[in-house]
Amino acid sequence: MSDLIPTVRNRGDGEVRYRMLYESEDKVYIRHIKGVFTRVRKYTGLPLLLAFFFLPWINIDGRR
Image (cartoon, rainbow, N blue to C red; front, side, top):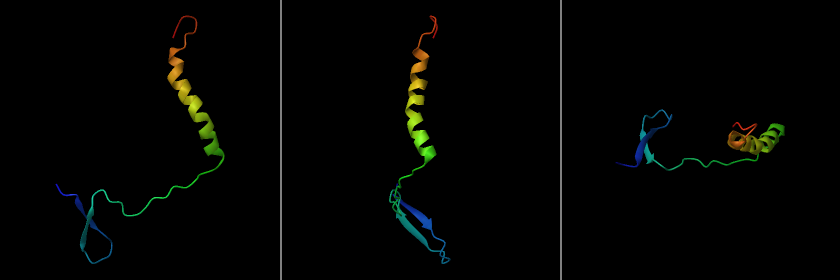
C-alpha cells in the first residue's frame, strides 16, 4: 500500500496533488493559557482524581 494520498486544493484548476500520508503540512505551535478557570482546573483536578480512585476502598462503619 502506498503512503501517498491525493489532496485537492481549492485552486480552481482541478489538479490533484499527492502528499505523504504522515507528513504534516503546517507546524502547530502551543501557547501558554492563563486565567482564573485554568488555575481552578489545575488545582482541583488532582484532588478530584485521587478521590475518584481511592474513595471506593475507604471503610465507613464496616461498609465499603
